[in-house]
Amino acid sequence: MKRNGSREKEKETKKQRLLEQLGDRWLPYLTSHNTDFHELWRTKYSKFMLKEASEVSEELHQEVQQAFVNLLEHGCFFQDLVRIKGKDVLTPVSRILIGNPGYTYKYLNTRLFAVPWLTEGHEIQYINEEISAACEALNKLNSYFRDEAIVALQKYNNSQAKKLESLPVSDAEQDFPGFMKEEHISEDNRSSCSHGNQCANLESRTSYNVTLINYMDPQQMLYLKQEPYFGMGKMAVSWHHDENLVERSTVAVYNYSCKDPLVPRMKEEDLKGRDPAIWHIGLKIAWDIKTPGLSVPLYPGDCYFMLDDLNMTHQHCVLSGLQSRFSSTHRVAECSTGTLDYIFSQCQVALQNSEHKSDSGTITLKSLEGTVVKQVEKIHNEVEFEWLRQFWFQGNRYRKCSNWWHQPMMKLEDFWKEMEVMTHLVLCEARKVECPMEKRHEIISHILPSLTERKELRKEWIARYFGKETK
Image (cartoon, rainbow, N blue to C red; front, side):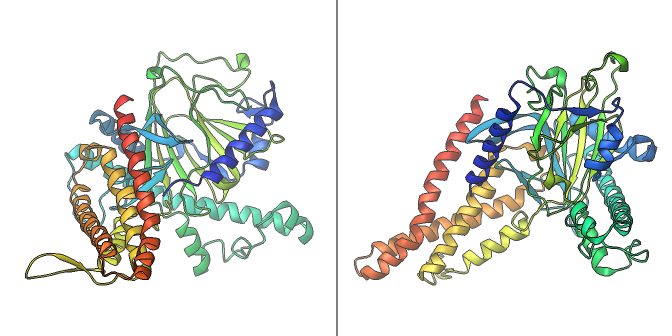
């Protein structure tokens, strides 16, 4: 249930080691006014692709930007209380998740529940027409990004394949590690996605199922962290890899920093680093102090793609400008355990061990076998701590857009109540005088770990709840 503590400790150790190596000096980084900027981008950050606003249709720009404004005006953006190093921290950025019906996205121990966009086979009612239009526009952007990402990956793969052809095999393996795999070595007839396996592979890594939409007005923020390694200035989002994504899936982002004629622009000749008035995305190779970082300016309507494994090998941060900014970050979220269909199927597995007496309406257990009891209690914890408490902890924020989640969560709560009864029945059986000692020990040994975890997590969630009230 809890985040991987050893992984977090390892990351913190690497960070501290890197800061110790730096001492009082900054690592070098390049931005657009530096001579070697594009060469560094081409050689070290080639899987970061920028699509300027002028390359996107004006109609799509208008629909998406109006969607952002509508969501903001209706109060749909919320700061998340995330869990970092055992402490609850309020994010400086406000967010809303929109996506496939029944999908969720989890980051920093916080599960967000997607406001559904219109999907065939699902009846979705929104609070008003403006919210409906906003979700429709973002779904349209999602489809556009899916098509563009496939094209971008094909172009990238073909360009790398041409480079490989001009190199001896030994040099190719050294200069392009991991690129000698069959899926990357494409002949001309492969470049159009004519091979089914390659096409399916590209589609699986670009089939965006959610978008995490961010909003921040830096003028309203009393404090923003300074970028710690390069001296890039104030950060809206610290260095990170995006979490819980399908491996090697492409992330696509639409950037919209609101135009403000009062925001001062620095003259290029006066700049010693990035222009602090303009939003940038910062890029660096993870835990590398030799390769300079990259700071790419973002203008209203610009889009960018983090292709293939860039999110795994590199880290990125968002560097604050002076204007308020929206971004729609489209992801292929790893949802094997993060959809309503999944958790409902888990509930059905657990409830197979219960039987309702038609004459009295009481519930009895079909089996007290240790492995069955253990499985039921594990699912019991999953329903409570990964779903119900996550949902209700966030209050009624989702009702700002749609009541879609209300009914399934009430149904999930009914399942949880039945599992509570099942736990009680197991304990009653173990307490019976006639229960053989060996059987009693078996039951206790299988149920105790889940009960212990439940007790600790309930204490943690109560503390989180009261901590939230003071934020």
